[in-house]
Image (cartoon, rainbow, N blue to C red; front, side):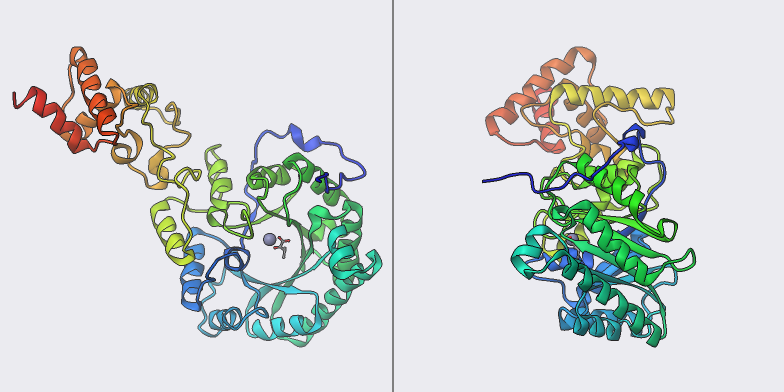
Length: 434
Ligand code: KIV
Ligand code: ZN
């Protein structure tokens, strides 16, 4: 029933595999308010989009796809509100999506009238499946749709005041022959003729993630090498996450030549979502590279995101979930407690505490309430850590084992996690009040 429906490019070098890590952040573009929003059960209201937009600006995003203005009145009015109320900071560029269809492109230009600078993002579908099943058009006819759209963008931009950057996406690229996709992109670029002063963006979407991340990186390597006007083109990647590999695709894609990444907070987006910008940014951060995005107040980000999208951030969501810095098990707790003590003793500058990939405080988490928590899996080190942190009791070595067993047995019988106060209560009932 299933077969591999992706295309390996005609030639690859795999040279990018030799790069070990990402040395400098890509240009980030948030598509939360478009791809993310279009996948919500209840899309955001205008007020909610405004609040979300402000959060993206606060994080430090400089490029934000704010919607598909021709798709709904809210989308249209949102763009108008941003412009008319002067809400777009000078250093932020807004981006709007449009299909390559005349009336949609025209409506899009109406929506951006008066914007100081905007990216107009044009797309049409290029995959074999879409060509054959949806459009029933030949490769040439599909290419012509892209070229006609590109011409109309140029024409309308010349009639409209404002500073526009053009972006083109061969939508459903992941099911498109790679050399054909490049051919379509080059035909669009031949219309736009980008220059150093007026760059265009070519956006490669893994619309449906259908291959392993290194395959997408190979495709990107090929696009990178065969795009015309390459010095005047910003090569962007728009990974989805159907196979759960959106972050890996984005990371390898950057190694293979992508200049820009489109994604969302917490990976919201169509189906299994878009690449999670938080994970990708924090992965760089944990390698000592500043991603240029501020995720230090993760609690606020999470709270705002959950309230506005009505989605839930999974307990094990990298860097953000409730449990991602928590150790319940005895051996992990012991290693963390010792690692933290070592760090203090040696005044370590770099982070190397066992089991904690980053310092939880860098994303606003606390050691005492978020890291060591007590249940039936816990050990003496963890119990002592909690007593010390919460009630200033540092047990003598000889007592730790006995108190540890006492506490974990109670948790086992109750089948519950124990709060710091409960641990103290158990301790005092046995050793203080008797
Ligand atoms: O996933 C996708 O292909 C898209 C395009 C519109 C870029 O969101
Ligand atoms: Zn998408």
